[in-house]
Image 1 (cartoon, one colour):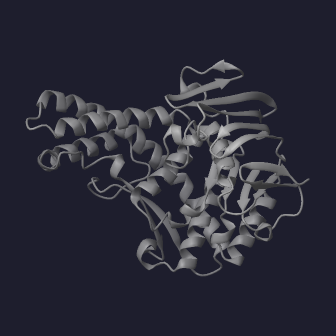
Image 2 (tube, rainbow, N blue to C red):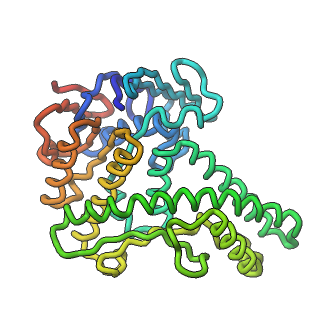
Image 3 (cartoon, rainbow, N blue to C red):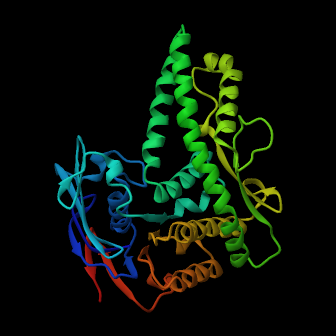
Length: 371
């Protein structure tokens, strides 16, 4: 999978940009605040129809403009497609081969990307929502229908929370929401358990290669509402039974607090080194090595299990890694032999690539090829 051409118009601080990326490595360099990350964000939007940064659609449109346009010519397994995204203050419109896309599920999977930015360095020490987002992005890449599954759950959760805030709760309506929450919540849990089951061995092997020391790295999916030991190969029936029991047990507390306290929206990914919690006990170097292992393992997981090579977006990551971890990252990228990569940096010297590379200077939203 690769982008053969990219066109950007009135997006963020970029008035207009049109270029043909290198099929392997593309480096966007320049000072801070010039628009380098905006280029990666544009590519991500063409994959997921939303940003990897929390933003309103209006914030994505250049100042004093009514709309922005993103368009890419994509080669996926020898088949060429044209993906276009129009951004308006009132929303987005997606086109595939110049035909409007009515259901986003028909569009998802056209472009698959993995993004790795400075904020990911704090993935294991940040909030549980960041770790849930890591899992969900990986699952979405492999199963685009997962976007619909999470949307259904989020909508029911929103309605259930609104009901719980009322002075008097309609028990019949609450029962309906409970049934839907169990069904849609179990969809999410089953996807996540399957992901972690196959991701764990890849991540553990990758960590040992990056951090040459006697450490046992591990990750486990954590559900504080689950009674007993969590099994990654748990059946659908068991997941539904556990979630139903947890909702019943939490009913009184949820009425008092006015929101849903159990379910996949509260779950976490627990990372350990020699059985000690990374959040509490890992050094800065160990933490960064662990996160790097997780991102590389995510790429390997997609390539090995689903036989496709995602586009990789690296947003100024090299400045956050020490010399040895940075060297390992680029050795891994070169060793893949294929796969398109887009990298931003303030200093070209951080980027340990000399072959199959196209460099672009980015200054005040203007993109200039140096090759």
